[in-house]
Amino acid sequence: MSKPTSIKTSEEVRNRLRILAHERGTTITELLEELATRELTEAEREQRAVEAARELGIEYTEQVQQVGQDAWAKIRAHQGGAVA
Image 1 (cartoon, rainbow, N blue to C red):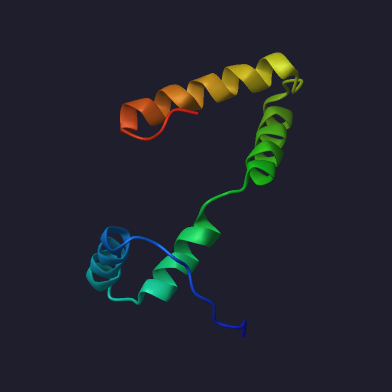
Image 2: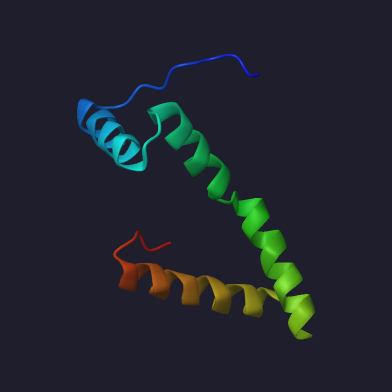
């Protein structure tokens, strides 16, 4: 088991985390662990993109990478998320 630590955040964020955890029947710590393991790092996203291109028989070029990034930015914008 890893050593416990603390994360500084605003009261507003802490309160939101508390509500989200309560609604899911879990703790803030478990909620943060879930979120951290669910989200991919940039390197993991890039690796998955390379693997997906390979499966589709597409050469993963800079142009393909840019088209993919643009597509995801549009998807996030329509979902109300931050545009990369």
